[in-house]
Amino acid sequence: MAVRRFAEMTWEEVRDLDPAKVIAILPVGATEAHGPHLPLSTDVIISEAMARAGGEKLAADGYEVLLLPSLAFTPAKFAGGFPGTVSLSPATASAVIVEIAQGLAAHGIHRVVLANSHFDPANIESLYAAVKMCEAEGIAELIYPDLTRKPWALRLTNEFRSGACHAGQFEGSIVMAERPDLVDDEVRTGLEPNPVSLSQAIREGKQSFEEAGGDRAYFGIPAAATADEGRRTVAELGAILAEAVAEALDR
Ligand SMILES: [Zn+2]
Image 1 (tube, protein in one colour):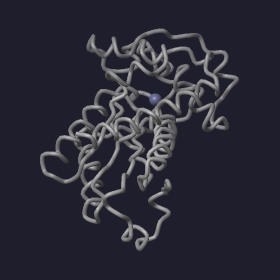
Image 2 (cartoon, helix red, strand yellow):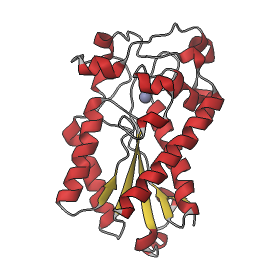
Image 3 (cartoon, protein in one colour):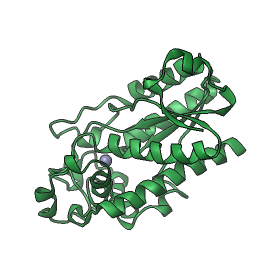
Image 4 (cartoon, protein in one colour):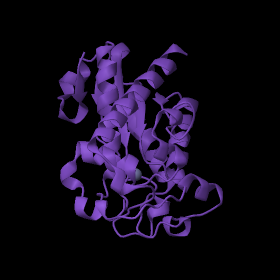
């Protein structure tokens, strides 16, 4: 089976899909500040890479995989103080996802995987709310592997698990692998490490990158990023996505 870009198909091709074999993947990113060296679209790039890598595995297992157009505007409260960040409310974001699922389900596409790499708590909240709504109203099955939780988090890099992970080594590596043209390497290699854990700052009630101690909108070690690490991480993210689907369908 193939991985297809949904938006590039014709309506007749969509009509002729076998509903039992179809899995749609919705990459969920953000439009938000990612340090002085990475683009606003960093999380979109990462989620699209995860969707592609996971989609290839699912296609090899016999599924008809549809890569949906990405969700690039989502809740991004933590980065809200930085120019370029565009943040939706969680209620708006979950409504958008639910209505996308409704639109797909109306034409026989009932399984949607959320490939998310944007860990603002307001975004994660909106994803869980969308999953719940779709389940409660029988709209569709949304499969959401939350990378911030076990078992998935344990399979990602040390920096990721430390929580000092926004525009640092983890994310920078993936953008270097996927879109090196969008990385300002001169700035990146000159950045001092910022080992503040965002997940801990969130638990302490901090509400923004500035409050958490990231006055240039990055956490972690940008200078340590490599394209090689990025390729390994993308492969792992793809494996996680495919395993999450297999588990959900087993249930
Ligand atoms: Zn990010």
